[in-house]
Amino acid sequence: MAETTENIPEQLIITLRKPVTLGDITYTELRLREPTVGEMIELGADEGWKADAKAIALISGVPEPAVRNLGVRDGKRAAEYLGRFFADAPSTGADA
Image (cartoon, rainbow, N blue to C red; front, side, top):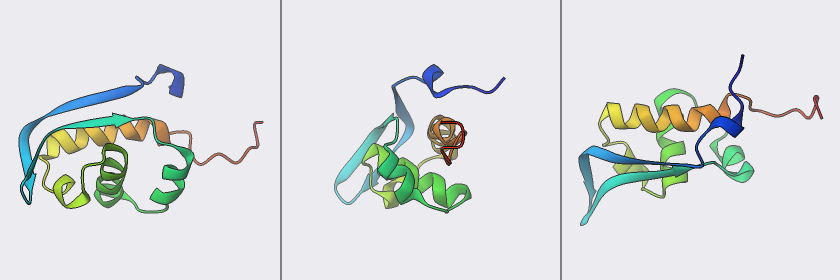
């Protein structure tokens, strides 16, 4: 049975195993939440890690260059959380 979005936590805070620094700002955590429809559209057709980095940056507010420096375990955990919202996308309205 497929997971529904109702079963996904409203927010996920990931404390980074290895903080990342961009300029003079150090990021120690990612705060992720449910994407908006507009954000889903903005993410478009990118795939793989490129799409994951873009989504993590867009949703968390951490700049993409910093996201690209995350450890793989932190990036994978963030991507898995966000990916749960994409499992049913895109909506065609066919079941409405």
